[in-house]
Amino acid sequence: MSSPTADVAVVTGGAGGLGEAVVRRLHKAGTAVVVADLADERAGALVDSLGAGATYVRTDVTSEESVTATLDAAAELGVLRHLVISHGGWGVAERVVQRDGTPASLDGFVKTLDLYLVGTYNMLRLAAARMAANEPNADGERGSVVMTASIAAFEGQIGQSSYAAAKAGVVGLTLAAARDLSAVGIRVNTVAPGTMHTAMMESVGEEALAKFAANIPFPKRLGAPAEFAALTEHLLLNGYINGEVVRLDGAQRFGPR
Image 1 (tube, helix red, strand yellow):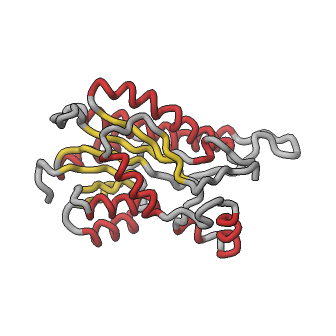
Image 2 (cartoon, helix red, strand yellow; image 1 turned 90 degrees about the vertical axis):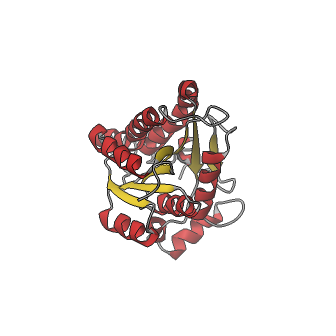
């Protein structure tokens, strides 16, 4: 059990490749961490490896009831100061209209927006309401949030219309939310990763990974989850960065395919 005055971070998708790197970095720095995910086995193993100051709460980011329970668990560890929204796990590769004239399924579009955009907003609004009750620091800050977009928000590729639209929504949310939450002393920033070297990416095979890396100007490799975690931690702690979307992509710009 952490101290009731300990700083706490909630990390959605905390058992995934990028989220896990964030969880490990924040925990190592002394922040108590709530791993908010649906991957019971992976999340359980992660918190067991970290020990005190880490807990797993099964969380459906689109459910108010589920998110509320997660935030209640965070309150048991200490004071909720940080929220990192990095969940994933769903995607649909579909053109708006197929070559045979068949329209894309509306269900795939709605499900993608529900997870990546609605789920992000749901976490943000509920966590920010808790942070608003915190005692402010010398600058008046009560909490900080880092959301996750994608460079697909700017250069969506063929078949990525649903995902690109959802992530573009997160980009658009960033400044508006930062302005909204300035009244209660909460900063909001977003990381837009390029092609990252996660376990999911490894499943495509070495040949495909090499092809992806060849399209990145410099360095000619995929991004490391540890680099995502380092940038996320900086955005959480640097009190003068607010309302920003930061690309993490080695100067990569997606082409049409």
